[in-house]
View 1 (tube, protein in one colour):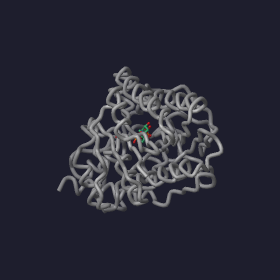
View 2 (cartoon, helix red, strand yellow; view 1 turned 90 degrees about the vertical axis):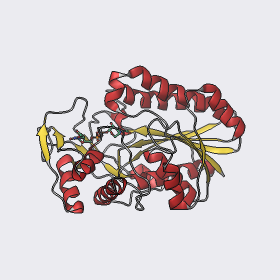
View 3 (cartoon, rainbow, N blue to C red; view 1 turned 135 degrees about the horizontal axis):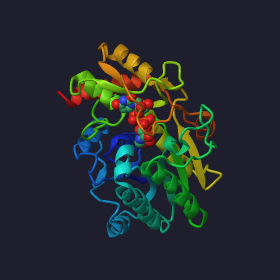
Length: 337
Ligand code: WQD
């Protein structure tokens, strides 16, 4: 069975390609290499022994998307990761985000509605909840007005899929990620942030390696136990496995509704200082950091209620924060060696 993974050479995409291949799927990966590198194909092959079919396509090119589906009309499902995802960049350059994240989705869906089977897994984000009132966050928590164009493209994307599924053969699962971290245990694939990392864990591992002088902790005056923000850090391999489970649910037509939504997290919240302490434990290294002012747009706390994913989807995160940090550290050391 052939599955398309868009953004298949990216951080979460490449880990999902590995898990799909482990389950015996044939994978075709689309990537425009704007935030990934072609060497990721070799990393995947080193892990599974199989190199996915690769198409260097920019999904903003409508005719390229149409030609892709003419060539690969036997695709039975699509897992859609390809999107721009830097919150801060989206504030500076909203049109880049609306063009890339929305146009690409529309062109993909237009082609999918023509396929005999159209199973669609959408990469969404807990950012749609904004600062949810109640922790842990359930899927029926209200979607708040987005606090960045990036977050808005996730909300709009979900709404587009819901509207299209109503009048087409598309069945979809919206997966709202919390904070993906870590790397495959082989250290053959992992996160490759370009430039100064925006996210906490890659900044920590680069600091530990000596590429950054120290970590800036964005505020310790929040109403939390130690004053720093709380997040749900989920291992990227657990996250990848959830995509395979969601796809198999659609392929086996186990979905009672045309569009289903699941929060993907560990269900455990960790503060920034707790992440730092955990990293120091797993790495055996002291991490230099300083407390600075708050970052615009940060929510105080966000961690998942995982009941629906556990009981309905039949998936549960198995790896811990420490596993994620240890694998991220192993990966950082590998790519710098
Ligand atoms: C985590 C915590 C920061 C960096 C974003 C997107 C989300 C998803 C994941 C794409 C926060 C603190 C961070 C640093 C710090 N992106 N921090 N110093 O903002 O929760 O989520 O990335 O899918 O959609 O919203 O993740 O890793 O940036 O921050 O103190 O140098 O670490 O304040 O509390 P975030 P993050």
